Amino acid sequence: MSQGRAVRWGVLATGGIAARFTTDVRELPDAEVVAVASRSDASAREFAGRFGIPRAYGDWSGLLADEDVDVVYVATPHSAHRSAAGLALTAGKPVLCEKAFTLNAREAGELVSLARERGLFLMEAMWMYCNPVILRLVELVRDGAIGSIRTVQADFGLQGPFDAGHRLRDPALGGGALLDLGVYPVSFAQLLLGEPDRVQADALLSPEGVDLNTGMLLGWDSGATALLTCSVTARTPVTATVTGTAGRIEVPSGFFSTERFVLHRAGAEPEEFTGDGALHGLQYEAAEVMRCLRAGATESPLVPLDGTLAVMRTLDAVRDRIGVRLPADDARAA
Image (cartoon, rainbow, N blue to C red; front, side, top):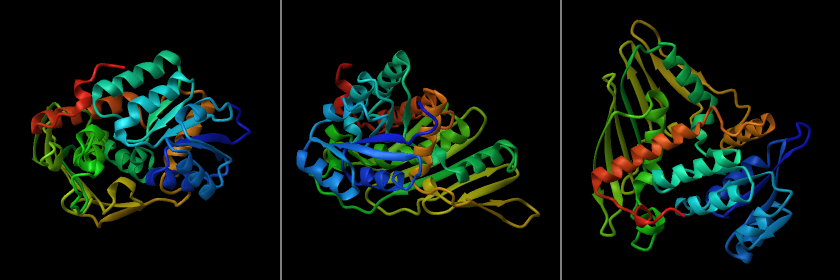
């Protein structure tokens, strides 16, 4: 890809996260959003008009055939990630796919294999992993600032109730707290500790069979543990804490998109670390995708596909422990 021109994005879907991404990316000087697609002509046209996007498609195939689209951002509900990202890759388009990456590890593995076979860029839109404040936190931990990690705590909960017709209650749409919200605490813990050696979990399930309130206890052979929660029945603090043998790091509310954290060490005043404000929000992940595309890379070192697969395996293990099974788990590979 030419170093001199803007990267041209196609946005697949028109919901809230697509709007937020488009708003943030349009502020980047080296990016353009040139097309949007929806399953509805009216929705695509409305979205295009709202954001000044030149082309709107009432089906996915139109966007995927658009030669001016350099990379596709998949912003559909996660129940459609496998099909949407798979079609984009088959059409030869690099992909940034929202999280949860897919409904299960099998689907995730299919997408990763497809991207690697075709030599195409693919990345999960885990914006937390691209945040320089979080990267600084990881660097401090790996440099021994708090000693050896002993505990990680993180939560993400929204206040319901969500009625029975809501997507968060629909197993076919990957409903429940875990895939929508729990992916953040799990990804945070695994960013620091890697894939756990043991997984325990308990949950309150809805009448439809999806998780409404879930607690997870992950264990590593190093002796580290992670206590993680997610909920669609209660608004939790949405904070994170990493405690080691020589100190701890506290990340305030909104830990997954934080602009600051505090390092506590015995005998020393607390140290606050903040971002430089050069970028914000979803710009971090977009900038990483564009950097990789210009470098000819097919995977991001910040959001490696093997890490995404490891998170999906943990989410599968949690669902197994709490008794949540989705229709996609029984579907044959496409």
